[in-house]
Length: 331
Image (tube, rainbow, N blue to C red; front, side):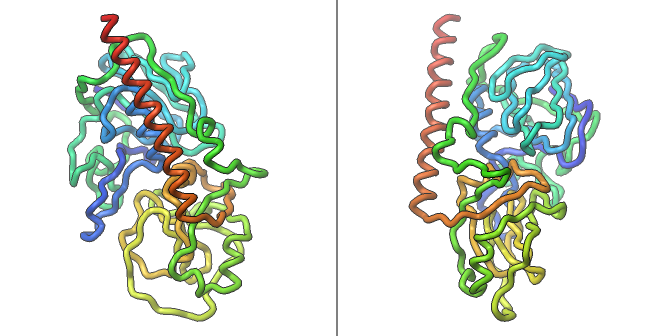
């Protein structure tokens, strides 16, 4: 069991989401940085579907009511356990009564706390993720609040109760060859032209050529981008169509909206492009006010990046299994 002793708005329970229900209007939800959750769960021996806490408003503090393995992944900055700084992207074991604190990260937007066995909240439609707009899933369908007490599951694969566990090189470093670096504080985001791209003519090129800023009218549903407006060459009426995270739509205002984890299930705005799936975790770590530029990509490039990420994750998984076998042999 854990107890929340300090939190802010929109900190929620999330896992990898609930795909497969968009046809009945249910968004997938799930972590904005799914890669951080996947790695954290591997670090402490959880299954891939174990639920974690997504922290996007700081400071955040919780109390461990029992000894358990945990790890903090995602954002840069060091977690603090009873006043002692720890390494991120590293498995630890907390003792009963210890307090974990997360402070505002220097650059990135979201941190994830994973627990041995995962958070013990109900599974709804195959997921423990919080759907804030629907008011279900996670911790009673709402953000975490001071005084909340949440159970933690039991996993036979969780790491033994040792002082510390395995650490990994964070994705931004380990995958630097697969992801283009920021230039002058601008995040490059790869995307592929979508169905209505040609309707924008010259403004379509302006979409790729300018630097956009994530506006304050952004949340887990979508990032609204501020910049020089772009518009189709003529007014069009479109039937609503299915959308997924990464789709970039252009409303009449001309300021694009990037659909994110709580993406709408359908919409009628024209689609100018779609962010490649493997770049969504970087976008999920961007803050309001951050600048970004879209870079033309291809399906072949997207596949190559996906393969690099898969190799990275599988290398961590295999190393974790080797560590667990060694620990069992020593027991």
